[in-house]
Length: 519
Image (cartoon, rainbow, N blue to C red; front, side, top):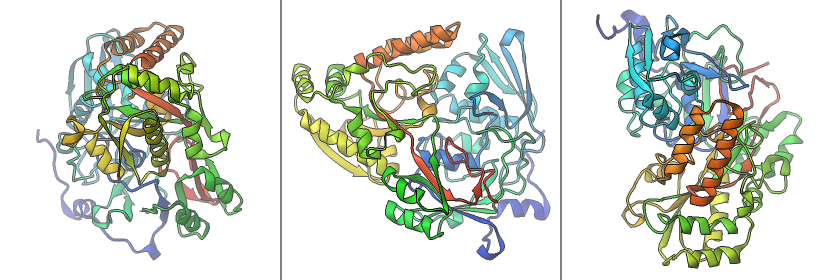
């Protein structure tokens, strides 16, 4: 049997060739994201805009509902045999990629294998996998070493890194930031010929996408593209973006700075709501491979100086409904969250200065990367860089765009050879929901701290028999974070989004473009 067949005739040509659509004969949604999509490869990095871009272009085998339960998405169904060690996943019939080619089990295998080398939860799944193979064009089989009930959750993961299903040729390049094609099977096609870097990103409804019949519930169910085109307009200045929304030049603004929330709420034509219902978290991440942050005592010396309210105020001012301080490692108010050890962050600069001297800091230059095109990240980075300087670090604040920072943070060399020392990032709520999904405690993510006890306790968490046991392990992991400091949590933030009042279907928890329409 041949690997795949090209569609013959005019239908195949129409699928493969991008077309320019006039604004007067189509339905367009005009959207402004938080920043430009400088990283298009969702296996290379996971900024908010990359994830949003990817959710439009690609689809997943499973998807989570609003209660975090997994449901088949690209799958017609699945079976579990051999006491939970054999899973057979059957693709829905008629799935096609945007170039017209069918989605085959070989594509699934290639995509999941690549994801399993990049993602923390994927690595766990593949460490338990004896075999993953295509049994037919539509059937994929996992044979596991032992039962792993989280398999559907892993394959539904909506945060960095999501197991999107790509054509096999693309999956082999994913994670390298060398993807040129953006061929998916999701409800929208990326129009590369209309891309204007720093100004515009355009998507077109994929006419051959067949939605599921179930009602949409967060990320699961029927994804319906009501708009013919989605046009992202990049507006770096928040005041300009707010004015554009009020004047009707755009329909939806993804990330509204807290200080502009009251202004937009007073406009009867607009709706303003919290976007991430789990709550994201700002973090300070260290490069543990090189001095000075290869020394855990130097990382730990920073903790006494931290007052999370200072960072949250820089982002959201006094609007306390939008932020939480004195937060720990896991998502606020969720099952793994606790306040164990948070008292180590006490806002005591003198104590931090003494600890830094005792730890043996030698005045090494700190290459502190700051993303200027993400207003909230830049605000937090500015506060953090100033704090480090005040407690005695030799700080070199290096301002870049987020895409450049993302590429650079993959560099494992010392800072004088193109590497880095510290950066600020923001995890969405799911990226820190529990030990299975948490990037910050991982030794494989940028920074590369090797903390064997954390990895061992994460493994124990996977094997724990009940919720109480998992919660106890999560508390232990939080204690280890305060001891070895792979990163520092800087507070939890609930960002705002704003859109025209007539726009229906806008969900909390990210900003997926499907199922959104004007009433």
